[in-house]
Amino acid sequence: MDGKVNLLTTNWKVDFGGIAVLIYFPEMSFCDKATSDEFEKQLSESEKDSSIFESFSDTATKDETYKSLNEFEKDSRIFEYTSAANPNIPQVPVMCHPASLHESGPTRVIPFDLSQQMNLPYPASSPNLLASFVRVCENESIETKAIATSQAFYIIRGAGKSSSEHGELNWSEGDLFVLPSCDTSVTHYSTGNSALFWVHDEPLLTYLGVRPTISKFRLTVFRKERMLAEVERISHEPGAEHRNRMGILLGNKITEDSTMTLTHTLWSLLNVLPAGESQRPHRHNSVALDLCVSAEPEGVYTLMGPELDAEGWVKDPVKCHWKTGAVFSTPPGWWHSHHNDTGKPAWVLPLQDAGLYTYQGTLDIRFSPDPTKTKENKTM
Image (cartoon, rainbow, N blue to C red; front, side, top):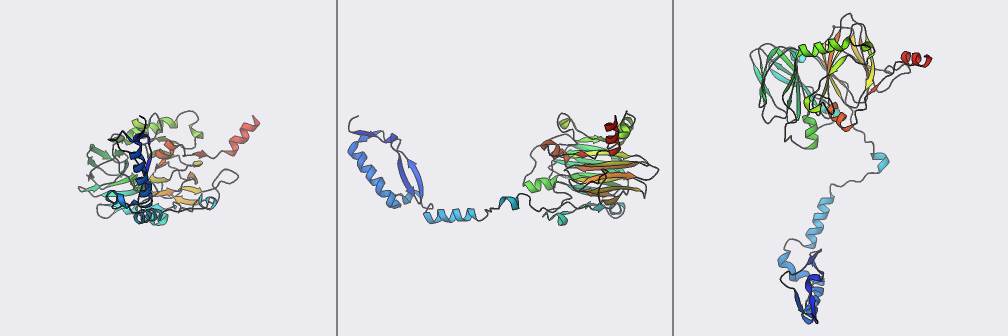
């Protein structure tokens, strides 16, 4: 091998319009040292003038390379950390979607759209969810469609059936069912004057710029009779009167070993507020879209706000009156307590994006302590 050089062990650098390329010649193994020196001399000269390689780099000129880099830099932004770490994002407002919207008029979908208040470019009731009323007049039908991983429907009143690629389901007042992602529309047919409370996570997917590719769970229904029976059962358990809420969480087979929520993104509770009682404040990072299932015309309400007073009640609260068939929003992180000053129980069904928060470990649900119970424990 004297007087020869192995080209395969030599690094050859060639400049293609400002781009350094390492090349070798697999068909060449060894050559005379003189030939190698001549080839290296030619490559050295080519670094000064890359025109001999123009046939390989018709579009990769230096100007075009720089132009591409400048184009890619146009969208870059740099922020000072302390002033940008907690940006001023528009907050979820406290708003009401009155029952009168679904009590009259033609068959239609009535969105609870707060996108303008939250400065969002798409319909939404919260950053992750959109709630709507679906009014279906007697013997009429309507189609609903959402690009969503989860859709929940609660039957405010009436009876009928819903058909989708996942099957056909009969429903009546007080039932709740959830659908996984659907490629086609869902058709709802009413045998009476019906209204449905519809919540789905399309705003979350719109924000992410994605579409669902699989169905995470099966069509699942919760019948009114079963839910009421469970609430009745737990209301007689020892210590039930001291619980922060008197209700049942609705779960699913796919979440029973993890989040124990309605779906992997949605969460729901059927909560009864007994006559003459108040439920102390609690808070969570999920947004609640609360449907008043039933309440007396006056005397049932929620107090909410970002702080508690010295007694553990909401400080300077916003007051939301419960009206049967209406929906109100509870902002994330706000303390909220429920109050029933009437002689009859009231019912509320919140739907939230807490499935997602629970999975992430960021729900951060907290319960206001009862000062009287704290004092009793200290004296024991």
